[in-house]
Length: 106
Image (cartoon, rainbow, N blue to C red; front, side, top):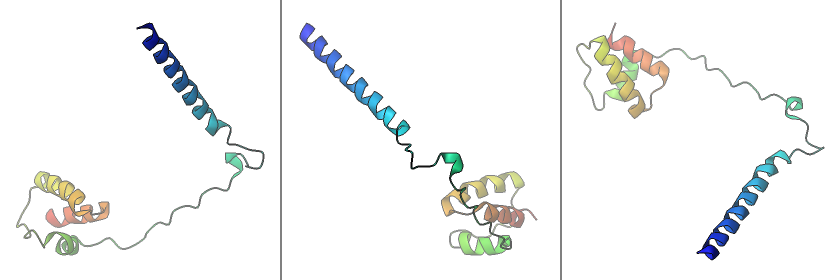
């Protein structure tokens, strides 16, 4: 039983040493040739899309109509739940979700 205990301790020591060395590698990757992070060029800002908001009827026709008929009326609480659920399933944008909410609740 003591041999098993010694092997276990040796194995755990080797694993601990390996993990310690792996943790030290990223810290030592900074060289004299690499400028510090603050001196590097800032990343470019992402482009902002300034398209016109889409009409809720258009969003419904393009995404929902192939499976659903347009509802005659929806209560705001039901339409909010349905639109949030289907936004994920139909991969709709936040803007499309808002357009559908305006369409269902004029």
